[in-house]
Image 1 (cartoon, rainbow, N blue to C red):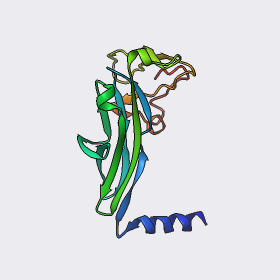
Image 2: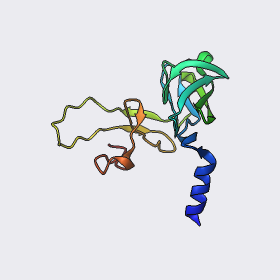
Image 3: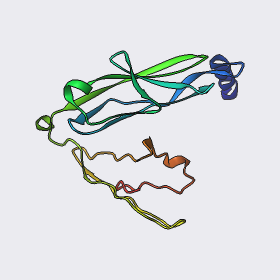
Length: 169
C-alpha cells in the first residue's frame, strides 16, 4: 500500500520528468543581536533543479542561492519577514521566516551566547580533528555546524563526522 501511494504522489508532483519543487531545508524564525549575523537556509529539490529566490517583506532581494546571510544586523533595516521561493518549469513553492533583531541592551536573560567559537585547524590528511564550540543560555542552546555556509549533514557523512553531546564536532 505504501508503494502505491508513493507512486501516486510522484505522479501528482512529477509529470513527464518535470517535478514541482519541494523543500529539503527551509528557513526558521530567528532572533539576532544588532551587529551580529543571521543566516537563513533554504534548499529544495525538483526536476528541473529549482532556482532559489529570496524576498524581504515581499520585495525580491539580490541574494541568490540556498543561504541568505545578513551581516551586520541592524534593528530598523533587517527585522522583517523573509521569504524563500523555489521555482522551476513545474511551478513554485515558498516558505517564510521572521527575523527579530535586538539591541544589545534589550537582550533577555538566558539568551544564547557563544562562549568559545571554533578555531582554524590544520590537520594531516586521514587524521582526526576536533572542532570546539561552547555556548551558554537558558535553556541550554542547541549547537549547529555549518561548512561553506551550509549546514553540516552529519547523517550523510558515512560516519566521518560526529557531533558530540557537548557540541564538539
